[in-house]
Length: 193
Length: 193
Length: 193
Image (cartoon, rainbow over all chains, first blue to last red):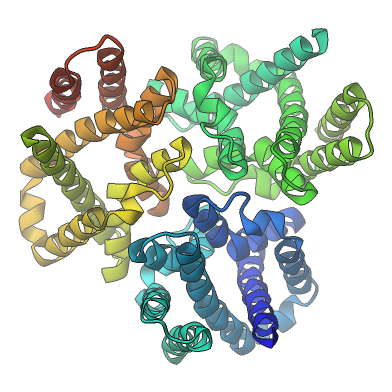
């Protein structure tokens, strides 16, 4: 129960951090309100939507669960309202971003297994969940994605997703199979900053 | 009966207008025949195909109903054949484009509700139906989408989709729940030109 | 039996060739290891994944069948290790690429029919299977896709997919309905080089 709550909190914190990274990038490209909101939402939810389409989870949770949209909108409005402040907050934003990477990779792999798919699908879609939104953001802003240029980002996601699958297959207790790979992915990413 | 026919006519008129806008953009980027046909088709049908994949309407109507492809091809060939004339026709093209925006937003929201999805999914996918094709066109032509830069475009689509969902939930007669939001979206878009 | 084996060999040869074309393009854009692997995999498997999502083949084979991923990874590592050599191998690479185009177009159309879809869906998705990966590669590398600029590429895929559908509808023996359109698409593409 408490675990589920903690999981939800971290999930939405990751959504918030990814949305801030999207909103910041959109603002730098001179987009106005709708553009910033749209890029924030796509950065935060695009990876999960792609995963849900590919595992047959229709409709995608990023569309049907209002908390994702609300979180992304709040993050975008916050970025617009407090832009100079957000620019100085790079450290906490990166902290959340690294947490989001870990959580999305683990949750994506977990959801693919839950829908009955094999280990390869789970590992690849865990990675897609974590990096897909950032890639969509960069495509829409017409630049070669940072995800494709900085290896450690995708490799940390890959490691987190792979560890999740191994843990669930070896029957680790759920708490360990969830939090160990999140911590592992987070550490890999955060230590490289 | 008559209503259904009118709906089909406006639907294909929207497809035609979106395809012209795609073909015109592709021709400006010096693409040749296939490139122009492909961009015209993707601009006209890309949003609807994305919607259908996300609501579980397999195969997407844009692929399986030959009238969409045929309309897009005719619009593209017409644009190529009469290019100087089309360039002077900005007013009617924009008129059709604004009609297409309204119709696609309303029809997209309606189809999502028809497949049993909730209000949020319907509003978001109504908007995706209306603006998705234009965003795909701009990504393929490697430019930041005009949809992300001109707010009123997406907001008009959002307003049309939201009004559709409200109307259907409040039990408005189908004719009103269909035509009022189309007119509303069309007016918002057209008055901003 | 033997036919199935031959089909698999050519399928993976096409995957290999498409992955080499993706890895070569990614390396030219100065991407490092993960970027090259990702672009190679997406070039080789992106078209098939899009097709599978649109025909309802969940999960997409490009994700769930490890042979595709392995082939793409080997092709990418080979490209990195032997880059100057690969650059001199343009002729065999193009040969494989043209084979891949034919095979993917035919296999894509065949799979769409197998899932019960109509002729238009099969022809369009045969083409998407063959050219979708290359278009995704070019979008990620932020350039207008060569597929949209060189007509013969997409038209050869279209011809191969259309011939497959005609052959299956007219009840040609499977060997003919498979190999004739592959040869036709391959010839169109290869003679234009």
